[in-house]
Image 1 (cartoon, rainbow, N blue to C red):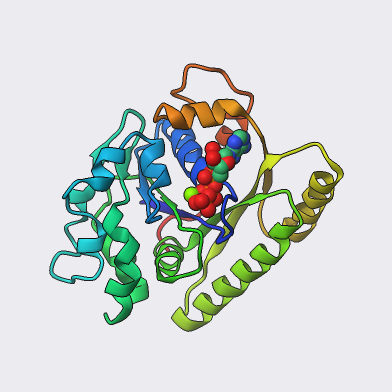
Image 2 (image 1 turned 60 degrees about the vertical axis):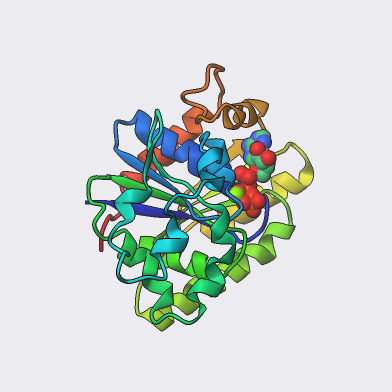
Length: 257
Ligand SMILES: Nc1ncnc2c1ncn2[C@@H]1O[C@H](COP(=O)(O)OP(=O)(O)OP(=O)(O)O)[C@@H](O)[C@H]1O
Ligand SMILES: [Mg+2]
């Protein structure tokens, strides 16, 4: 059984990539076989796990696979090994994927089809792009679970409202249920705005899902720069335990529904 998690918030810089890499790293620490997918055409997670060369090289990638039903079950060819997890990196061609998918039937379900045969993983973690376009729709529909990172700033409120609206629209259009599995407040500071936003998150998510607090830590950036999660990085960091809590909580959610 594979549990798939879309890490999504269309707001730029919310912490999607940092959360994706470190939650994948935490799941690996718990002994699971994990696949990290960088679905963002910018390729930040690809860089964050040291696969930046693959981003530029002439190799098969989701741009070739998602629009083409003849090769959509060949996703295994896209996978690279990393010390902590397997990875499907992004690719520069992904910048044009929205156009490539524009005319194809069932375009929102292409990723779901592409991931159908990958049953050796216990977890698939997908780093989403910073918009509510067709790639994010694909991730939400393929996973039916969403982990939401957000900065503890008032500008996050509108972003989350729009994300909830999009999730509701997808659920209605595709007759499915997309479960919010948690809110990761990211880069939480010690100012009043952060305190107020933590209260707002707790209030909004009280009945829905857990809320975690990740503080601003340069160790997380340094881990990213060396191509590993905080767990494989040589520095100790007090946020490791929070990422482990998130990973443990993912053990309790439904896998394939
Ligand atoms: N908790 C943290 N402590 C320190 N730096 C952080 C933390 N979280 C994120 N950052 C830094 O902030 C920047 C934005 O974070 P990140 O890339 O994870 O967000 P994102 O939502 O993926 O952004 P984008 O919308 O561009 O994809 C990155 O440079 C990252 O290293
Ligand atoms: Mg990102």
